[in-house]
Amino acid sequence: LAMTFSVNDSPLAGREGDKVTSRMIWDRLCKEAEGNIALRISKTDSTDSFEVAGRGELQLGVLIETMRREGFELSISRPRVLMKKDENGQLLEPVEEVVVDVDEEFSGVVVEKLGQKRAELIEMIPSQVGNKVRLIFHAPSRGLIGYHSEFLTDTRGTGVMNRIFYAYEPYKGDTRRNGVLISSEAGTAIAYSLWKLQDRGPMFIDAGVPVYVGMIIGEHTKSNDLEVNPTKAKQLTNIRAAGKDEAIDLVPPRKLTLEQGLSYIQADELLEVTPKTIRLRKRILDPIARKRAKPDLAS
Image (cartoon, rainbow, N blue to C red; front, side, top):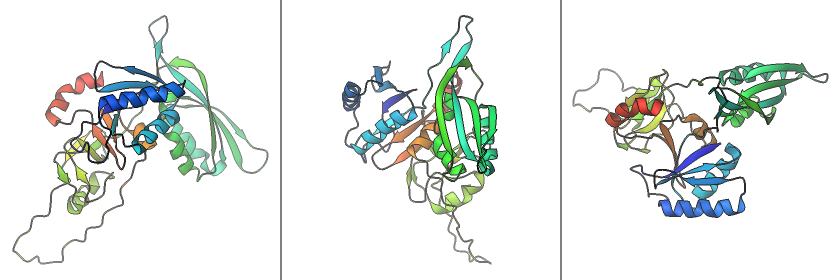
């Protein structure tokens, strides 16, 4: 897997960390590569971003978590698997053999979730003892990024999953994800506004959290991205309401961990990592520039 480590250039940069420059990030990555032979770092066309390749999302996730605890602020791109082409020019991607031992009652949800990630069920072996079942899949590596924590939740912590590289196979197609809710204003998220936006999809932030233009605050229930205003307060009037004011009942937000955030973001999005906060954002914050660049990002 490879991902891009960049300087945090969001409007909230520099508030929590004290190591924010590209030179500090490069020096820290060089120091890490000296003792970690599985890590490969290289410079990109931009002076503010560096490509870091490792064995998997766990190794890279540990590095990111270590750096944020040391006071670094980073912008992380979506992890991407290293693909190649065969002699006929066909795109090939790495496929892993996944062996899952799970209780029979949880086998359905595991097959469904891995099926959404373009995995193929090769064999199902019922256990001779108890109600266990062994499932063997061939799954693309990119679909397994961040899945382990979701797997433990689905199986109530009773499932066991083992992965090993299997082969390079033809590209299996994109995995689908809903659109996101993007903040159109900068300021502080207000409970009334979030309450009105709950019908649009689950939120990633609480009330009172600072937001900026281009920051992702939730997931849209539909496939397209939607720009919303989470800072809009209730309009006050001097007219007495006939009935009681509506009680604001906020659904608890879906807080993404570092691993979940890395698996959630798309190619045109970044994960903003600071010592205290993990935020999701669009790579291009300005909405007009983002719409113009959309064909380029998709390619």
